[in-house]
Structures are given as C-alpha cells and as structure tokens.
Image (cartoon, rainbow, N blue to C red):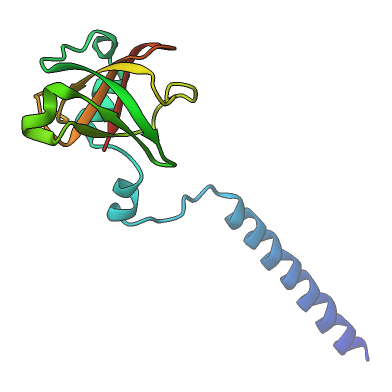
Length: 143
C-alpha cells in the first residue's frame, strides 16, 4: 500500500510538473500562421499603402480630373455619370466605396474624381475621389 501511495505521489508530482511546463509553453505568444495569399487578399498593394500613409497623400497630383454626378448607390459601389468620359467609359464610373467614409455617397451629389492606377498614373481601373458635396479631401478606392 505504501509503495502504491508513493507512486501515486510521484505521478501526481510529475503530472503537476508537466502541466506547469505546458502552461508556460502555452503562454509564449505565437501568431497563427497564414498563407501569403490570405495576407495579401485583404489589403491593398504596397505602393497604395505607402501612398495612403505618406504625408504626400493629401496632395496627390491627379492628372485626369473629372466632375460627375452620382446616379446610384449600391452596397459596394456608387455609379457616377460623367459626360466627359462617354467616348472611353460609356459615361458611367463605378466607384468602390469600401474605403470611403459614410455620408459621401448621396444620389445627385456632384463629385470630382480622378482616374488613377496604383502608381499614380491615369487608368481606367482605379478611381480617386477628390472632392464631394459633403467632404473635401482625397480618398482612394478600387472599382
């Protein structure tokens, strides 16, 4: 009986030491591993992030500057009608509002925008909102 009790104490002490080691090991901070594709999926390209965080972002030169009125507002984007763009884009620009503050997109509001790619050159895929009726400033969005 004495030997079994001693064994029990030993195993309990061993168990306690093991569980303490486990607790200590689990307390070390470990970040969950994510694939590169998942990391990249939720954020804009590096050049766009640098532009957004740089002090020059407020004074970003927009070479192609247009004025249009908002035709419709959907969950993910707003449609702007711009007569100047009829030959190239059909006159309607889909402006993504994922990164835009609320209250900018009202039907009928007149907005100024520029067409930019992520390198700051004029392009058809990205739209930079320069000014709206409610908010003055530059906001970048992907359509």
